[in-house]
Image (tube, rainbow, N blue to C red):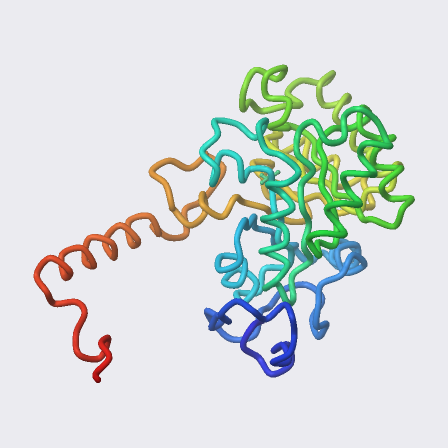
Amino acid sequence: MATTSQNSPAPSDPTSGVRSVTSSGGAPAGIAAGARRVRVHHLRQAKERGEKITMLTAYDAPTAAVIDAAGIDTILVGDSIGNTMLGHATTLPVTLDDMVRAGRAVASVTQRAFGGAGLPFGTYEAGPEQALASAVRVMKETGASAVKLEGGRRSAAQIQAISAAGIPVVGHLGYTPQAENSLGGPRVQGRGDDAAEELSQDALAVQEAGAVAVVLEMLPVEVAARITEFLQIPTIGIGAGPDVDGQVLVWTDMAGMTDWSPRFARRYAELGRVLGQAVADFAAEVRTGAFPAAEHSFQQ
Ligand code: KIV
């Protein structure tokens, strides 16, 4: 939390350059009670204790500060930055530079949450060497605590190489947006016995390769529940039903920043509307001369 004395940064803390944020309500009731920071072992402990893990995406410092202060356990700088922030239709054009810049901004204000950054399309598929180089760059230049990459058996060697270098890896199975062209767009994966079995094999491969957690996206409830039961590492669901170890949403979806959110996302606010009203109020007051008032002005 940004505002408690326990976690407030010292004034000289180089990560405290962005305005702090007032917590939205008391001490966060997340996993890792009592710990200053959520670390990788807390994720495994949460699964063992049956405590749900919370995760949201973030792509910039002010939003990450709000999310962290509200007590979210893990913040993912996802390559969903492509279609949520950068104006791309998909995640495919996102570059490592995009992720590094966003990752650094998010890590600079995150005080409690475990932070991960996604490896974008084209930065790990060539093999373990490429994957390790990309992961090392992300870790060196952002301050993230983990990287996330997509794919099961096809990415196992990459997960192994990155993990062996001491970098925690979060896997990503089910609907994997970087493969949207071969998957035929955002569609539920793992329907039917054969597809469910393939996904289970992928989940095992990701775990055996050393991943510390795995995101399960757009799976039937039963398939996600089964994978969650046999895996020792936590599963974080998005459109995968309630029987997983944690839930992740893209923050703009859950906060109602845009007109449309996917069916699996609940809108906890209508921030787009609130922001639009604030902008309209500002413009109206400038036009009438009501802003700026005396208290916003400097005298000689
Ligand atoms: O990139 C991303 O934001 C993600 C989440 C949707 C899990 O992968």
